[in-house]
Image 1 (spheres, helix red, strand yellow):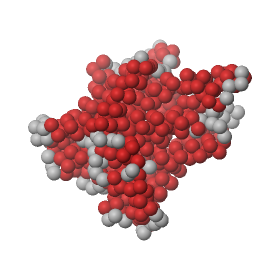
Image 2 (image 1 turned 180 degrees about the horizontal axis):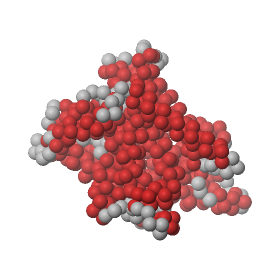
Image 3 (image 1 turned 90 degrees about the vertical axis):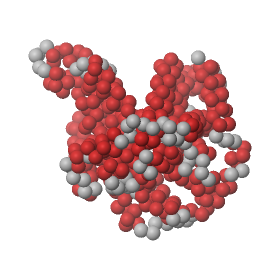
Image 4 (image 1 turned 45 degrees about the vertical axis):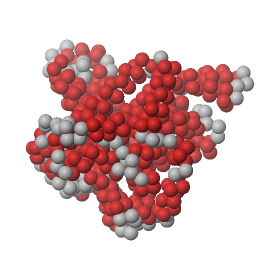
Length: 507
């Protein structure tokens, strides 16, 4: 099946590139415009470091609070969405449907709708991060529950306790390590997203960045981007350290393990409390947001498909094309970077650190910011969006490739080297055959992510259906927005199902 899949991928890439007029050779002639823009952005400067610092702290606290709220809400949803703990098949279906909806809708879309319902501020951003995060957290929490050992549950049930005691005493202890790793990873993701929520008025440092870009003050914009890069890079390194401390216990010193867990638990609680105080969030508002938001959401029903006509489906096809082409470029360019960034196969430690540093820098810049840069350099349209997503894809997939290569069995590599096989021979005979299933699965997941992301690039004029969506909301045509949202949901859900089916056959 793999050769047919590769042939289909190449054909889809060629057709998609033709549909959006993406010509790699012609694009090379436009690189001087990108370089000229970068020269105009240098040297970076911060005109108001105090304000930028406050917004940076606000962004970090938004990510933490949004993730905490999502984790709290995801726990009961996960128990309802796990086949072995759900109280009823109907409850299971509803819970899984809710998870799918939250995953399919981009967080920036949620932010736009919440801003319309609640006004400009950090609360819409926090709610958008939380609601979208439930889609990931609840799914992975539920998957972890379904993989638990049934023995402890049967033992606890034999004592005559009820459902809640059974879950608390027999299931939760088994899934906590997996939940911790997922939670820390989600904070990392939400921090990247929260930096651009300011583009739609949902708080954070993105507002200052948008202000600088609108005023064409590119040096100030670059200064803010560098601040964002430092924050995200520091958070990623911290997340790696936390995962290692909490999920890889030191068996010879259990007191150290407990102390680390107590410390990080206290740090999380303190950060959550600080978020409420610094962001001036009234806890009651976490309950009262529902009714004004429902008023906006219900205005999208029934959806109006006639207002945009064929333009709606042309824009939807363009969104998918952007996702296809950017994924293809990302796959081709990320594999060599990922190989060089794998500790067990890299030709030299210096090469390893350079590759890892490149991955970290690229991953630290959100796709929407890259899209803004390319739009400013190349003009409006899908070419800018494709370039932005392609670069972001390199950082995203290269890390997954490097991690997959580092986890392969060293035996075949040693066997090839023992008969005099060089570096290239080792890659071809021992590395790629083992890593291929993971590479295919990661590439399909990247395509899924890129299609989701391409739906919102239109907010900065980078092509796709996002432009129509944000224009319809800006002009209060919510029934038109409802039609666009429904199309986005169908596209994302269909691609997720197809990708999942292919992964199940190949991986």
